[in-house]
Image (tube, rainbow, N blue to C red; front, top):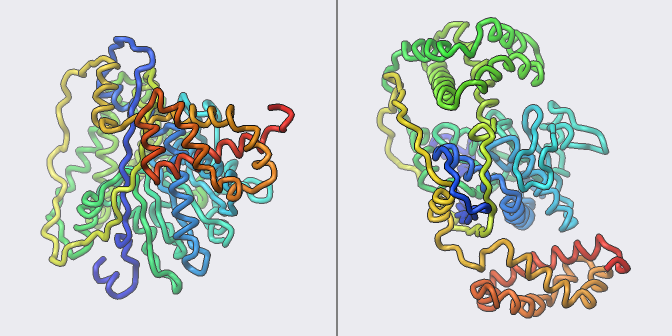
Length: 503
């Protein structure tokens, strides 16, 4: 990688790497002493927070600001960017959040989304709960659905700026106009390098790359890149570990050889594999896996991921692997993706709500990689398995408290989700007679000018119950500017969408 960068074959994607810190707080709505399995409940809380539509809306503002102000002018005004998400449902919500913000701004930025199959929205606070989406349905051109295979060519057109992805296009996607990446997914190991390397394609007009990372820190990224920067050698690997992993995976009785063979025909023989056909050939294994008890399902998923990981590594360093292992790998990788997106805890419900949120830019880094050659890499050996003990049980209220200590301990009333809404409603009640006619006769930029006094006056009421929120509006120029933009954006849309006579 170092030599390729020095000789201008690829771009250095770590030059402008901006990290963010998310802080949030949840509330146990029911205030009940409910016992839940600790591991599953913790995952459910994390999922609830990560998928929350409010978070996506706030991040969409950051992404569009950055893309439109900094990125789009590159590559002769045709620069493109990718939003990397952790799941198909998140990709859908990201696409919708971006499109809503684009519509609010009346921006000409256009987006596309890439994910496999059909997605049903499950977040309890989503305004589209229960709705189903497919990639072609969400990508429309002149009122017609865009076929999946046409997406790369369509994205290459000057009209498009942002591509939201979930798994697809994070490897092997060659788009030299890609200048920026917005990461909302935990990256680990070689996946870090593969994902960020979508940016490294050179273009005659490409001079910079940018990464905004909402999840990972700079040191974590540096450590993942380091082994690939210089020259590295891996110690010899015992191929028997793959066959042991394969034997253990099949011992669960979930995967049937006949289904693997049928999947292989659809995957290797058909020139354009159809996702519905692949799903159908893994449906039996998927059903049998999800029928397992929770502990057994966890064991199966661990063994499934272990086999996929071992095969992926060994196929690069061992000259020949059996055909049966290759077919099982293709089947297992597809099944693992389906199981990964199954609802955490088998649909475990946690009765909580989001009360506070803050998204803060930490720093923009030039991540330096070492000048010395990297020592020997670690090889795969042993069974790589661990023992499972009893499943810890905790109270939901205690778990929410621990969650808040970790992710929201320093949040104040100024970061509350609801005071902002209370402020907006107060301004609407007190000032609609002045603001509504202005919204009707001006574009948003003109409407926004000179509105900070309205926000300061409106915050006086919020200050009675939220002193920190009031002080934020009064003393913090950046917080006041962001609050003014948010309040006036909501009111502008409210007034433009509703006739005057209805008020």
